Amino acid sequence: MRRRIAALLLALLATQLGSLVSPAYACGCGAMIPEGYARIGVERETSVVRFDGRTEQIVMRFVVRGDAPRAAWIMPVPGRASVELGDGEMFRQLTWLTRPEFKTRSYFWPRNNDWPFSSSGSSDTVGAALPGAGRSSVGVVGREQLGDFDVARLTATDPDALRNWLETNGFKLPDGLAGELKPYVDQKWEYVAVRLAPRQQGKTLTGTLDPLKIRFDSDRLVYPMRLSRLAKTPQSLGLYILADHRMEPASPIGGAKPKVTFAGEVTPEGGLATLTGGKPAFLTAIDQEFPEPSRIDGDHELRATAADTPYRKVIYHGELLTVGGIPAWLLTLAAVLIAVVAGAFTLRRRRSRSSSA
Image (cartoon, rainbow, N blue to C red; front, side, top):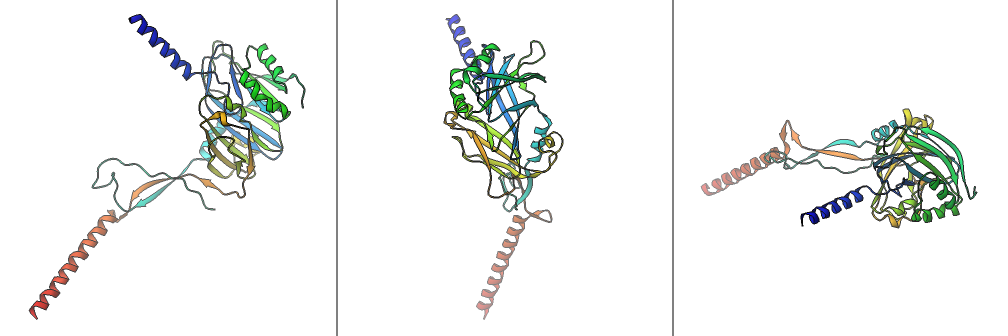
């Protein structure tokens, strides 16, 4: 009986671990395939996109977990692309640029953290707007070591040819992924295939990876999302878009309604300035949830909004309204009480005088 219980517990543990770290055949932008029986999962993906009307640049940073020493990452692109190592500092700059604004908002009646109440309270948080091609083969166009990545830049318009390259490098193209690549073949898109392999012997792909920067010519702003249809768990997308105007997705492509978390003109500095050439740009930050990834029906095409309306989230901190350090509600009650007493006293005197007369 003890052996059976122990075996059952081990089986349950293995099942839980398998569900926590699963093959990441699909992530927000592209697909990641582990080597052999290794496992890798993408916990978070953050991307910043720069579009100037002719060229699109996408800088992606992945936070992964698993035991894979190598992985292949595939991303469809509408034209010939170049790959280089991105600057991780730009993500900290974007967090700072899109930070919420903190304001104090007074309230009249006491709350549970004010006298005469003693329990702790919480602040009130709301959002507020500010005023205001096609060969059926794989061609290797370059290969270089970028950080921990052995990057092989490839072009391919045939899923079978891409499958051959993957198998040659020790990877297997999942059947579902091959099917999802077909629409890109029909559109004469190419692929960027990156071989992720840490230089340090025995090191696995885990934690925050070095960001990668993809650059290609395009006459429209597009963010590939179709491959995320293969995800088995809800997906989330976070995009920072640097363009000439405020941008918005043309449609939700099967996800929840996209939410704008920031919109406004910024002057990038440091690594972020390399995307804009040091020039000011309009930054739009968008979050979107995909509760059912299988409903994703295309790629995000982003367009300029009718107006460049700025937006910044405002977090209000509630503060009890006081006059001279005394709560306004207490002064008001005192004034009302005095008025009632004075009125009652006056009425009593009038009645007393009437009785005397």
